[in-house]
Image (cartoon, rainbow, N blue to C red):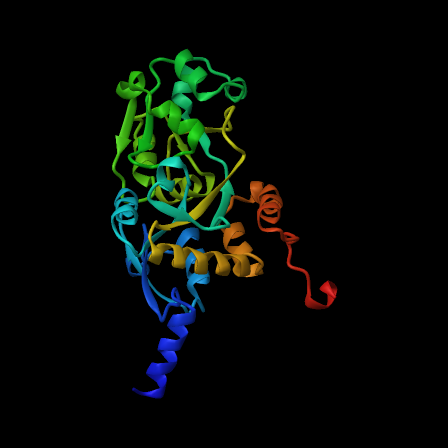
Length: 293
């Protein structure tokens, strides 16, 4: 028996969970070969997996709903930027820190609906989703199938009495298809995160007017975790990912990925929330090295 092989066996005896370059599949919506600018999810993923030597991470592209099915059914699969809830905890494990922090979901409502029903957007912000839907029974709401919008919204959207007013779309493009439905006025309102909505609005040159409303009961900011298969392989992967997240979230480059994806109007609030979540003390303008000493 060679010296190297004997050494490996000794290591395995003392460290039975030691990994020698396991393969982990990281699923995402977009891929570099699409010739598109990488999203915040993919940019932060690339920083996380850089120098993560215990695993060979294989990025693959898939739909949002398919990604969660693979996390459930396979042993070595991870997916980024997901809400972690009780249902998903049954088949997945989550990173200790979130992969991304983002402004909370906004309720995007067509201006034509506002005018038709003589609605005050400011007054609407004082209502919860059940109150809004009860007050305006003709309102059509769109959502991405199998996407979690957080417990407060999910619990409402699962109600059977709303099924005829809820337009679902199996989207492969992170909700862009639902935003297209709003732009064509097939629906009246949709929940979405501001960075994505503003990006699609600019790319598609949307002509319809919409109101972005922060409604009662929806958190001001949100977090998205990395989820991996609930398996020995997935647990080892999430430990390594959590360790890397603790490192890279302290780097200015990681913050800049977040800030570059945000509308200017919310960057100050976004920075405050980032510092709170990751225990950092960044400022909007990076300080010179000599000023930090």
